Length: 112
Image (cartoon, rainbow, N blue to C red):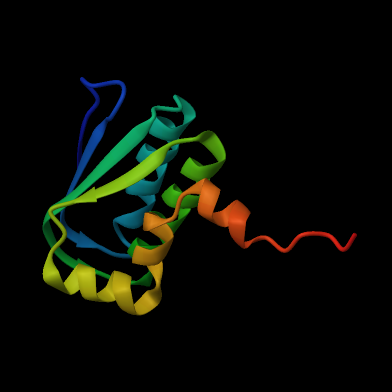
């Protein structure tokens, strides 16, 4: 993992190799640190990713959830086909594409 925070508006986190239970914690810690600064966007580059397990997937979901609370958009870049498939099957790609406005539209309204 490497972090390029030279653009404070959109720090870039490059993830390579395996993202699993042995490597997920450092990524989560780094993302939490970046999210604390509340940038408008954080870019996750997965061009060098070889493998991801459920722990790695949980880090992506965690970043998305925390980002939504802070107003930070999590953008994925250079997504390998296998990761794209996993994101689609698990519904995570749908989460990442949602906006706060869409969530508000789906909330049931209170009865009058």
